[in-house]
Image 1 (cartoon, rainbow, N blue to C red):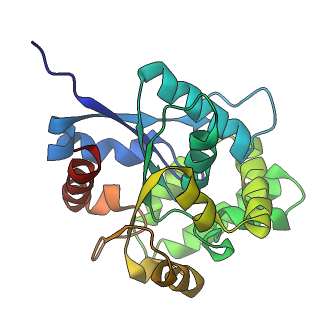
Image 2 (cartoon, rainbow, N blue to C red):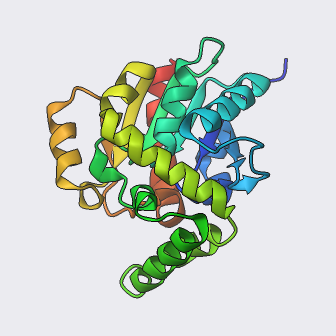
Length: 238
């Protein structure tokens, strides 16, 4: 009898796409699980025919997970909110969210939230790319991220950023994340704002430290991330 590997859907953060998870395909995680990097509409896939919001992207993610019968989602940054909303849908198959430095407080919207400062997609995209370009010298890993943001749909980028900002003003993302599904939070404390560190320290949310990793651990620490994800999946799926 052939062995059917558990499917793990991976969703990248703001402006990024499934290529963020490509290094994981060469790790031991991929030997044990079927890794399915998912491109959100407007971010590696065709944009939606409606406004791009956390909710509309969540509906897209939920449909995909149902279509492949996936119960586990690895969600990066703002996509942890998207996975949260997807898991809350009545028809969702999502049971577990492995959050990679997902938004916990409003301060985590340090990229997406800045969209609210601009009146149109082009001015936001231009300013955001300029900001990333200035950051590359001190954080070379951002060069890959910037190149992917260049391919994102400008309208989708701006609309998602605005919606993420509003969501973070109305909710505490970490509280919503913890209520949505079985969650484990993966992070490097060096990458989180103080408000989110405080929230984590006061929370009972299971958490795993990724020492020395950047905000994009699948890029610079794929083997470490693979090891920690395997350990977590072994515990939660046992």
